Picture 1 (cartoon, helix red, strand yellow):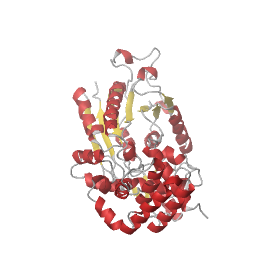
Picture 2 (cartoon, rainbow, N blue to C red):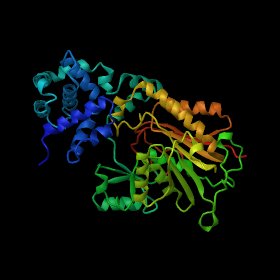
Picture 3 (tube, rainbow, N blue to C red):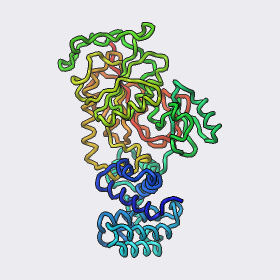
Picture 4 (cartoon, one colour):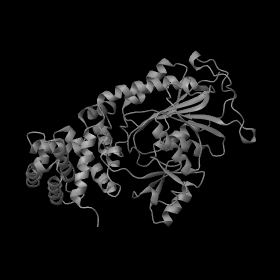
Length: 467
């Protein structure tokens, strides 16, 4: 027998309160004891997807905002029960158990009668109360007003579809480790285990029903990784048709980036071939680092995975170890190459830059409530600094792939327009640009399968002219 619903609602409300106070969703749900975490996270994600509607309903029910704990519990119940068709439990059951949760928690016990009165009224007048909030954009779309307005400006034809998509549950998408198996073989493995799936991208599979990844066949053996199909475009875009340069240091560089004493040309790999030198500049948790190594196949490749956060860098090692791969993992700031760079130019650099994560809201519904509009300006500045610092490290004829999991143009198209205006020698190769969530369809460079359902991403492939 599972934990009582009132206890799960208690913990869900505590997580919502923590997120409202600025804690990330991952940290808020990690604080829940493991046995209760899956159920609480499922309720929490649904509550976060409809929090805008819940807050509008609460304003209809109460003239004053109650204390944070009571408000979080009240809004959790309203978010879960406002639409009977989507409710995980009967609305009456949710109300009954939310009132029980309030009574059993010292932090909300004093507001128990208030919560009970609000929710009982909600049950009686639900249709009228919902109708009274329909005109409010935040209630209708369940995103902050500034987010809705910016998205409307950036994507005037698609903004409504994007917002609707953000409130849906995403599929579980895997990337097959082609060093150990193939897309076709792994689809057969899933089918034999009674798990329906379809092929997506060049080496991905999308499951018809999400399951715990550790219970999927081949997890311990490193036969797959969890990765959205849009994110699976990075390695093919960066590596397709690329070969190592003849020289990787005989180039005039800014004085602060002069090669340190002892820097030399790339050393031949097994069989005398020169490995492709690739940098994954913001690498944690290591999914794209692993894909670069997998996609290279038999081609010699030397990947450096850079991560500024020591704790997150450990996840890169764990990811690679499970998949049977290896890379040079460094803990350093990509903006300061003089502190970590060995002076040898890179054939290719992957810059998956820090961003608002506005394209992955389906998977992280807390993001929309954590972000502030001012974050975009700050992140865009950081992205520009990363581009400026890493571009000199690309050899002539080499490439830099800039990407973000953002739908905002300031972090995508506008960022690259500004870069090209200041680096007129750089060439923009055919690139997907802005991929909006769930847009589907084939993308140039990965013709094998459509992307299916996917997150929002931006890609720009930059090439430095050969001398």
